[in-house]
Length: 161
Image: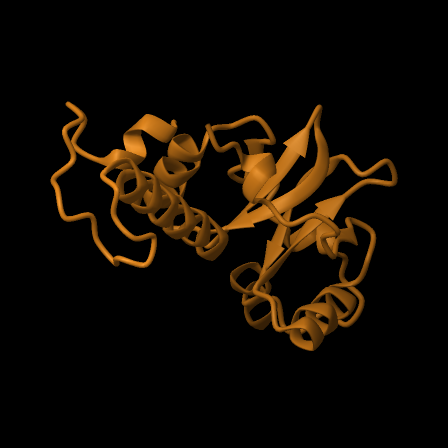
């Protein structure tokens, strides 16, 4: 079964709550990312600051030295590194978010994006096709198995979870 830790990307760019919003914006723009996890000195996740959060700057009359803590979303969707991929997909569908922080014992260990989840799903689908093709004695290069799936599940991917 695929878990968040198998899909996530580690080495995540972060900011601290005491950092300035200018610093956070500069990082987002420089790295072309829509948000940053906010962590404390020990790497514990405190929240997320996103482009959407920073739009509040317009309403706040452009404060020059305000801190990330003032604009971050402290209540954010988070998954544990051992969360299975079906639950991750459900959370993405329910929340509309594009990226989820991944934690282990409260510490940020990575992020998982909708795109990385889709890449994993595509890889799993290809693997299932290859296994089905091999078990039917077909070539690995056939794009689709020539015999229907005989499993009772509605999808060959169900057997992977």
